[in-house]
Image (cartoon, rainbow, N blue to C red; front, side):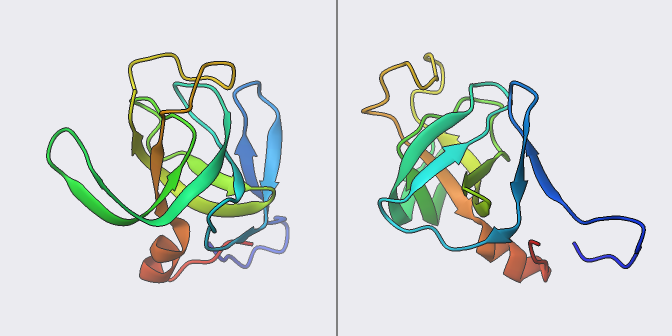
Amino acid sequence: MEYSNSNVTPYGTIQYKDGSTGQISRSASAFEGEKVKRLGTISQDLDGMVLATNATVTYDDGTTLRHMIEASNCSMHGDSGGPLFSGETALGIDSGGNYSDEPCGNSDPQQDRSSWYQPLYTVLLWEGLKVY
């Protein structure tokens, strides 16, 4: 969000589970095959890859979401709202995933796991916001 206080330096900071921080300075559309990271409040911080950029997912409660980013990392209940990013570029917001009650870490097998993200650019456009 833009502000005009000259005493404040604008930083888009993310905090990893180990307490370290990272910088987010821009946003972009994800692309298939892109290497990404996801931060989770409940699960570990995970590496993954974008599998699709126009995915449709139907959750167990019957809710269907379209035009989502699908990535190869898992997501657990409570991780929703966390960031999907590549380097300093924000890509999406965690919506949910499959296998959400099983272990969810980089050392756990994830070949059959997926998570879905709302593309960040749609939220920014809708709300008139920008990342910097």
